[in-house]
Length: 475
Length: 96
Ligand SMILES: [Zn+2]
Image (tube, rainbow over all chains, first blue to last red; front, top):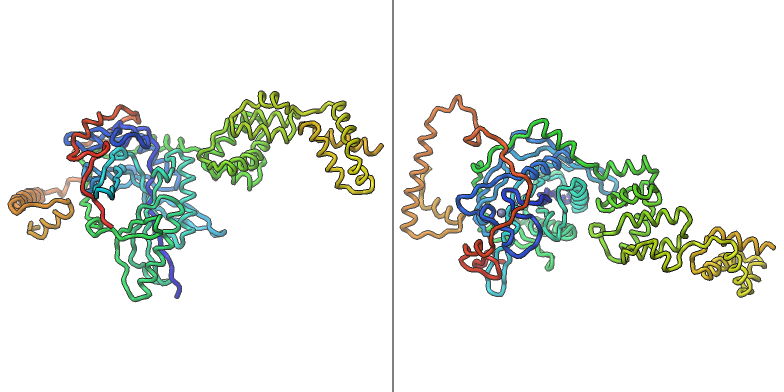
């Protein structure tokens, strides 16, 4: 019988609040080591945590958006562990009454739809960063990240392939971005996933699972799943047993390593956090959070097609990343030309982004300038050539479109006399092409149009050029 | 539950501590005392007392999401037994 992979995911998302979960230190990424630290987040005796209201709101917002049940009476617990990434020696988390239960998300892989169950979402504090220095066999600690708010989104073991895992992560990332609760920068660790994986013969009971940590990109997750699946199958086919353990993925080596058994000791001795009061979310507050949920990608996709007549394909591209849909909505509102704005963003802007190797989250182009350009081309003040050229200049150098067009002489030439003169000159200079055309070679017409446009510096009104040329040729 | 040597050495492992023999003896006594006290509390009749996780009746003590200055870094680092490049430093914590 065939082997089947069974995966469950624990996704940690750092919430994009300004301050930490229990103190007023900034959550800003980076900064000098230990410069975003205070007595509360460094676990000094005698300090008391105070919960950031926005953390609760973001967690509830996420839970509602993922269709979960919100725990009205929720609370925090201590997860005790002794490891230097948490100077308190315990992490404040939620074990007994997580803020949300029974959520889920639909994914689609190769045309097949499937719902992935989300067992729970809970709030907790992030730990510090450890740097292992091989030169002197020491570990250095930076506590800036200690106390940055996290939500942990725990899925059911519903995944049967790496593709399903990646589809889920993509959609989850998109949702968190649209909700505005997490910036989802994997390279900065604000979105992380631990993979619980086991294999079994189809139809049999669940096998022993391992947990893989240190997965810093979607690519690493895909590779790690493939590697671990093969490793476990090999063990079982040789009659061995999979050890339940935590493994660290090394993306450079393309291998995972079992962590020492001491680091595997999982006896957290949870107990209710006495320093924090229980949480109570009343109906009114819940409603206010519900009302604060912005329109998600799915809703936008439908609205763009319904209200603006944008194609399904374009709507998909526009909503794939929040930065793009935000830009689209701004350009479309400013220019009053949603269709043209959609063409622009899914066509030329994507092309420029690819060329410049810019991913959507780093796209920064002025919506006002794009709408000015759209209005110029639609009203016939510039032609498509000039539009593209100016666009590239706006994209690359943030130029002012009006100034650039004036300086480069890109205004569209619609003066029949000027166009007529250009046509005359081109026909006089290209007797060969003219003869070709007369002898029935239709292609020569296109060549002549190109020559006239060239003579006009690319700024001719294309309709006028074609008409003037046809008129002269039919004489 | 009795506090025996096995339990003490398990707790040593969990907490990354290594105790001297006289400390183990002292700790065994302390932990036994705590457990005995808990056993006494267990004798209380809690039949008509509802389960709760916190001694206070209040709920929801929040702060607004506002940033304030963190602590003086040098002051925080004074808690480091060894400091390296602005970081706390300890013997290596993971092996491969
Ligand atoms: Zn702090």
